[in-house]
Amino acid sequence: MANNAKTKLTKPLYNSLRSRNSVQYAGKDLAFRKTNPKGFYLKKKPKNPVILLDDVVTTGTTLLEAKKVLEENGAEVLFAITIAS
Image (cartoon, rainbow, N blue to C red; front, side, top):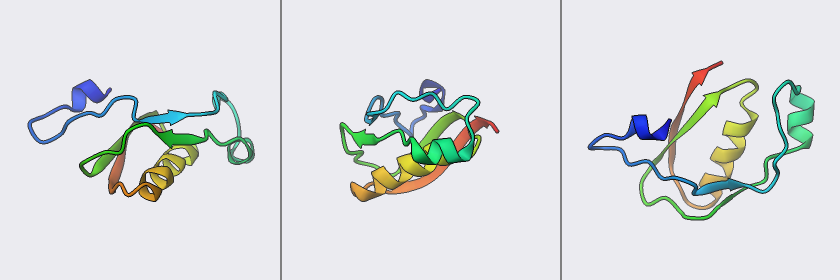
């Protein structure tokens, strides 16, 4: 997905945000998602403002957790783009 977002003004940053927890959220409710966070951590701090990309947004839990970790590490998150809801 990030490859398609590459332009003269945007540069995809791959594998910078990683998950400690490999839990699968498909078919799970909000309560499950909140009690089983992905446990994101940053491997590499972005140098530029961030646009989050995700394939599907169901409850928004993953995007909110990713945004929180990025901001806690000094990154500026502009917005998120998803393909489906």
